[in-house]
Image (cartoon, rainbow, N blue to C red; front, top):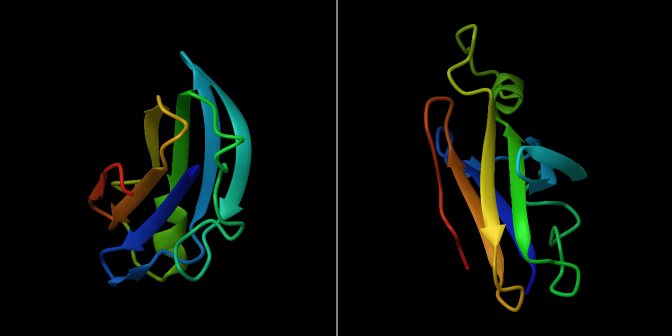
Length: 117
């Protein structure tokens, strides 16, 4: 099963291709970088799963998405400072036999996430 993410640009109605992102493990206020990546043309990690089912461990994690860099790269004129810069999603994995999918729907002014399937 494992861990995956998918980002959709709700301003343009497309996947957020080219958005920089990073995955961290967390323990309290401490975060350890696991992987940095740039979303592919489908708005996903180009290597597939962030963790497969044998590598995913119970614990807490953080996904960070560089929204300001992405929208600036798309030619969107943003105020300075931007309303949204980097979006961090902190989440927990309790049952590693299940799939954890963390989608992000984002515009320069809003975002939402949920546990997907």
